[in-house]
Image 1 (cartoon, rainbow, N blue to C red):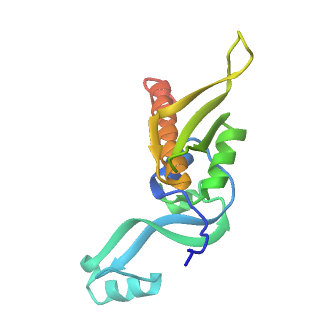
Image 2 (tube, rainbow, N blue to C red; image 1 turned 90 degrees about the vertical axis):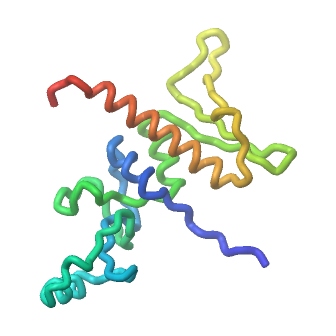
Length: 172
């Protein structure tokens, strides 16, 4: 039996890198620290009850819990630094393409594997007018989704590292 098609969301790590790069689109959910007791997610009221009983040390904060909501949570400073919007992979790919001028695509091979290409839309070869593209490390992937998400995480890491290097030593 075939599995139902699920919406693919960016993981917490990619979502935080997108936030750092200025991602500011509305999303249908966001990541926030989850509040847990013995591995069970707690509501805010349950957290207060445990603290009131003097059992606050038993409460654990876990990064990367998510909550359904339709807002841009990358600009909500009251939520804290570990909170961020949770875009779909499609939303993140479109933002990277339209705002940052980077495109990620995957192509199937005859061996039922996927090859990934990362293209800078501003990088045109002056000799033939074609876009320069790089095959992501020559790797192949077993699924389209894994190919795209791995390449996206790689690209976002490169972009955030480059941004940090540019800002290092500058007064902001």
